[in-house]
View 1 (tube, one colour):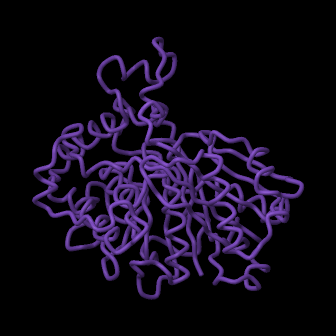
View 2: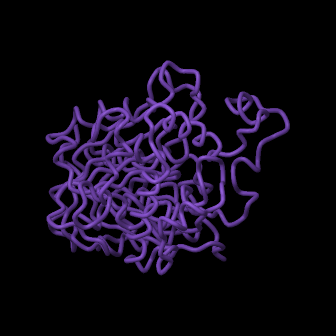
Length: 383
């Protein structure tokens, strides 16, 4: 088990935009160099690299451009949005087991070009799981999650006003975060309820942004971290997971329980390796490609009972600084930027350093997830 044997010593990111002129390789290298500068570690010391299988740039290209020394560990994690925490987990395990000494995990992404989106790249003949959904109208991830949201509404009597709590909290956080794409653009309940449908019952504000940008973190052994410039943030526990009933990704409608996603499998592993539980978490960063993923994750990871996820959000529960569980305090994928959830990891580190633009008092534990609905991953960070 990890149990604080590895620390995140550096964080870095580029500016977020819709239509970056730079390549994904350039963005990745900029974010990694910024993270190394933040950690006070020269690039030549980097000997571990961890990224997404969807990352368009190979490790050798990144290593050559930032000027690493010999690389003795490299790893890539699949399943898109489910990979973010997994990249950090693999890097941390590599440092903890001596496979490398300084590891970097990152994500760089450009989404301004509509042709880059996965549903615009499907071949005429589908041979994977999409053959069971796309020919019948489930063309985009939002369509797939809309089906789950409808089931949730019908089964538990949830309302759009409750779902709005998610979007409103995250937009509030973004309005305090100058780096957020939605900074300076307030959102009201009336605006939410009057917004156009994207895939009913999900409206415009239930969806993540389309963002160009990159983020990175640097990991080192715990005994080295106190000698570096910033307060250490320790990787306390991590997990990956999907269950035997989640073979069809986000279209698992015919399983025994379509509302029980991969988070349940990841949660069992995550809490098994931790010294604390959900009640001890001070701040959360929960993957929010779509707003219904928040209640599903709250339930899957044990913050509330089955069917109580949207009720949990009431009364400003997700809002910083003093909500029941301040969540996505940088604005998340829905209001800060959507870079496959990697910005949630960086914001989690800021909270534990005490430097967030929506700082939670006495934040010393942080819970972070990657995508619900796909094989996923999660982290627990602590001071």
